[in-house]
Image 1: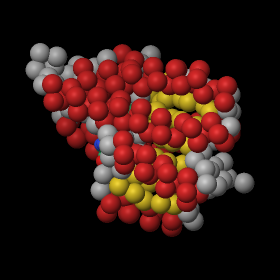
Image 2: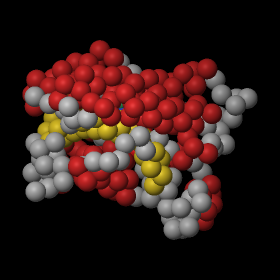
Image 3: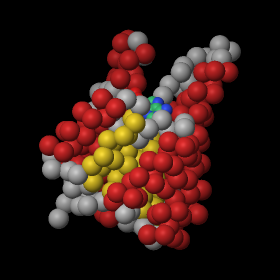
Image 4: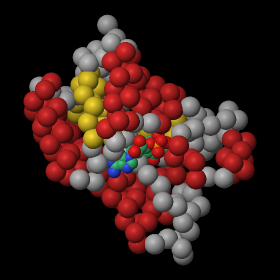
Amino acid sequence: MKRLQNKVCLITGAAQGIGAATALKFAAEGARVVVCDLRQSAVDEVLAQCQALGAEGLGRVLDVTQRAQVDALVAEVLQHFGRIDVLVNNAGITQDARLQKMSLEQFDRVIDVNLRGVFHCSQAVADAMVAQGSGVILNASSVVGLYGNFGQTNYAATKAGVIGFTKTWSRELGPKGVRVNAIAPGFVATPILHTIPDKVLKDMEQRVPLRRLAQPEEIANVYAFLASDEASYVNGAALEVCGGLTI
Ligand code: NAD
């Protein structure tokens, strides 16, 4: 039997990057995937790749900042599959500027997607998971949330914030059979890095003992482990997956 056989897994921000790699990995592990992102055409492409791996699934537009959309999607998933086993709170954005230059709009937008969006989705699935007596919530943190990063006041605060969520919800939901964990990746080769100058990325690679960026699949593999029953005693963790960058 595959590691995520028949588990119903909702992945936000799944049209590209780490989210798409996670949807594909989960599909390959036997999951029923709910692929969500801002654009239907992009969602459909990833869902088709999941279906080509033999997975059942749904592809839906979901803006995690819109609570009504989140509630409607979770209701649809429960109606369609009768349960929800795994939520991967992957959707995230950056809007970088130094503290003295950051606009309130930049600050609010990143808080809205990366922090409030995670709250919306997790609150929306929590009752169903508690009623089932099982479930897994996985949050996208970052090494930036642990150690900070130049120009990322807003982003660092959200990525530290989701670790706070993770530890709080693992205490609240653990007794009900629901595990909550976070992954703190280092720098992963996805479109989110496109705003970072090449020279900065090259310097970054040199600081990693493995001397390279991560590939999205290397983060997806860790999500798959944490989502599976193999991680049955992992709860409240913020797992660094950074090639040793922070040593
Ligand atoms: P990405 O930009 O490639 O993909 C993010 C996805 O989120 C996009 O498809 C985008 O459309 C979607 N999204 C944005 N706003 C949304 C919203 N309001 N509602 C729903 N979806 C929305 O990014 P990525 O590199 O794959 O990052 C995925 C997650 O991993 C993010 O939370 C990011 O902060 C985190 N992360 C990334 C890195 C990295 O180096 N790439 C490192 C650490 C953590």
